[in-house]
Amino acid sequence: MSRSYSAALPIAYVFLRILVILNWLMGAAILVLLVAMPNERWIMSSFDLSPGPDADRLVMGLRAVAVLGLVVVPINYAILKRLLAMVATVRAGDPFVSANAYRLQAIAWLLLGLQVLSIIIGAIGRSVSTPTHPVHLDAGFSINGWLAVLLTFVLARVFVEGALMREDLEGTI
Image 1 (spheres, one colour):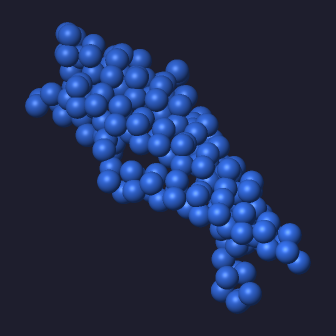
Image 2: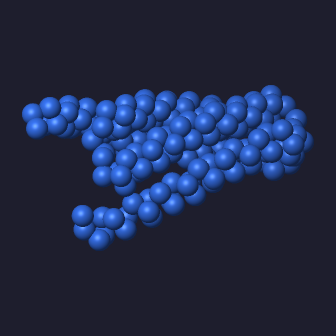
Image 3: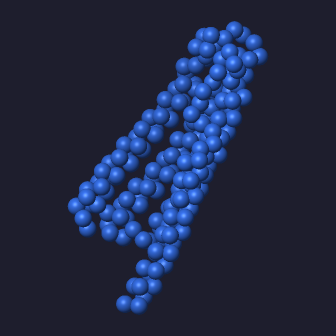
C-alpha cells in the first residue's frame, strides 16, 4: 500500500466525522430558525413586505423549505454513517465485502431522495418568488447530482461483483 493511499484514509475519516457534526449543527440551526426566530413579522420585515396574500405565501413557502431542510439532516447522517463504515473496511484492508455493496446501494437511494427533495425545494422557491421579491434558492434539478446517483448505483453493483469474485477466489484456495 502506498504512503499517499494510507494517509488519505485517516484524513477521510476525520473529514467525515467533521461533516457529521456540521450536519447536526445545521439541523439545530434550521430548527432554531423554524421554531424560535422567524415569526411572520420578522420574515416580512426581512423581505420588506406588507401584509397580504403574497406575504402569506412567501412565509409559508419559506417555512416549508425549512421543514424540508430538517428532513435532509437525517438523510445526510445516514449517508455519512455508511461512508464511515466503508472507510473502516478499507482501513482494515477488506473493502470488497457485501456489506459495502449494500451500503453503497443504500447511499444511492438516499442520494436519489436528496435529488427529489432538491427539486421540490426549488419548485417551492419558484412558486413563492415574485418579480418584486425574488427568492433565490440553491436547489432544483442538478445534472451533477443525478450523475452522482447513477454513479453510486453502478459502483454498488461493482462492489457486489467484487465481493462475489472475492468469495469465489477464497473458495478455490
